[in-house]
Image 1 (cartoon, rainbow, N blue to C red):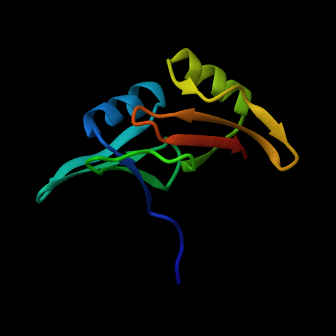
Image 2: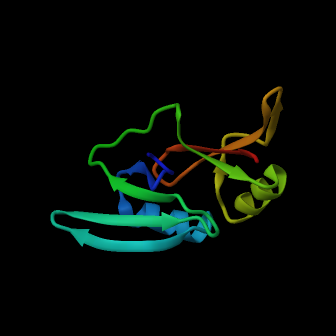
Length: 118
């Protein structure tokens, strides 16, 4: 039986730029950064979480308008304030909808990343 998600892949054009963004600005930790034949495999870990995030290089990548990743935060406003202070570019301030509170930012590659209260 399936048990959990091992990793989610986030498409990136520049792995070095994305690695710096996710470690320095978002606060993720490198789990592994190694060569796998012709490609580089970078797995990032959210402290305290089981699911990894893979920075998957896609030459010629163009971001879409749909979120590439949805995360959970204990406190949306506090997380927004902390990430914004680190230079993360947000789409707008946190919003409250009937289904919950959320905020969205763009990563170094233009991917839309959202987080909700959880």
